[in-house]
Figure 1 (cartoon, one colour):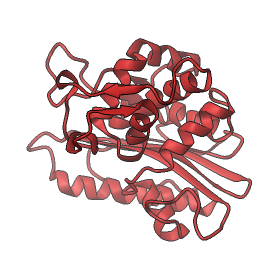
Figure 2: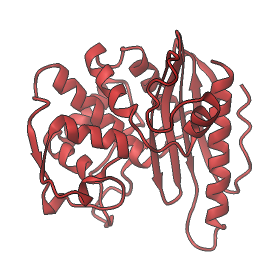
Figure 3: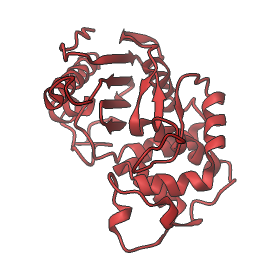
Figure 4: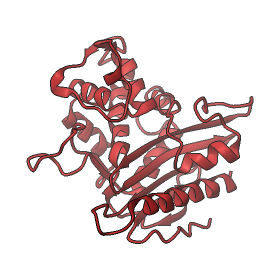
Length: 275
């Protein structure tokens, strides 16, 4: 695979693409620990799915949003009038639209320490969800929502794709939530446009045995995309993370974003090329 990424001026990449057996096909800086923005929410979904599959929580348990957890930006719940939703619907909002308010409500129920323990059990060392989502991060808060390496995250995607992360029921539930992801601006852009998949309903398309799910993360100086695509019995998983300094005077940030998205699309094209 050709992972020659565009020169975006000051961008640090961590990329790893794996085959269906979990073996690396190509990588760039796979062990670099970088900021991953909302990608860390996958860890929350994994632990939530484990709890549901184990019968430790009910998928119908009502969860109510509150002012102390309120946060805007990505998502839908903060625009809706309903105050209470079933736990499984809250998780669905996280997977589909990276809902920040839903993330905070779900994290309060599941527990940050429990999510961290699940990450450790999965063998993750540099990949973690550090905090709830906040509109403003103070000096007493963790400096970023989540971090990770492409090596660890692509391995997690490979395990989820093969029902080997937590177990078949839980892993299937995580894939279901992530298959509804509406953000296909990065690696998924090539899979959707060149692979003939519906950009929203892309779990299966045109009666082809294609399955595609992913989670993206966007923040100032961060773009990240992790996921897997299967065609028949062939599966490729990936993690692609780009970090740069977005502070004024360092570069024209919109040009950097454009170059990073072009690099992400290139990775998607390479993934398609090996399926």
